[in-house]
Image (cartoon, rainbow, N blue to C red):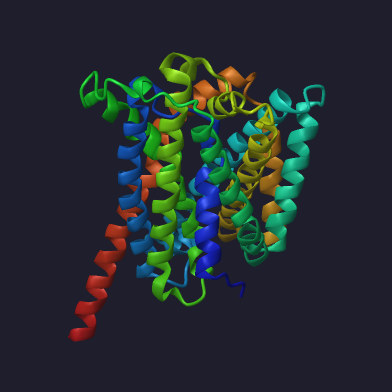
Length: 364
């Protein structure tokens, strides 16, 4: 059986949560209070991640698909597993499309999008076929480079004198309700609720005694980073410019100019965005494939190749990037709490009920 360490899972949580998140100024409906919406969703996401970990604690040796079949029975369990397979595959598809759009917008403007997305899907399929252990070991290897790059970017944005705190004022200018409407369910669903996919991987962790501690610490760290960058972007661009920027973080970094030596750092941003997107795509693709493997009892390799093919083909369904963003940030985020909140809550309640009944029978 493949195994991963607590440090590898923590590193992957950071890589995954950042993923495609910096592509968007989340919470922009709250204007300059977008960072407060991000903060509110991050706090709720922390509690949600704790719930996911508590679910895993009830059945440490099974992944989500296996738990669904064990708790809900073979037929209903398989149906729910297929539902999660479709959800994970859809999330992978959205990130593949993000990868293709980002590449054609910033670097390879004349390269066919189909070729770019085909290459990233092939690489993700190869990484997934290599197994959970290899994927998470690679994530651990890239973690310091990834985190260091964001730290350097943060320092350069501050030292370049670009942020203007007045752009974040007045705080709560429309009251608390616009902040809460921007945060729930949209930002909770993306990116924080997406950690539900780790229920497919936590069962492979060695020495699970401190799994909660490592995962929650990683989540807290990455949440602080995402909220900070959200506020920093808003302080650099202001709500009006942030609202119309295709990639707000890229727009902010392009403004860095320190003594005419450090400038045009958008290449650095693009590369680390590619890195985060790759790991997010692969986690979702592998999670979906493991669900298919459990549902139809096929080999992992066949499930991964099939899932990769579905992800690639469906990445062309959205006619353009504007439609892609509109569908994802206006509609998908309102549907996916079904898989991120509702079904996990029902699963946890069913597990606790079964464990309680089992305990009563043992005492009789």
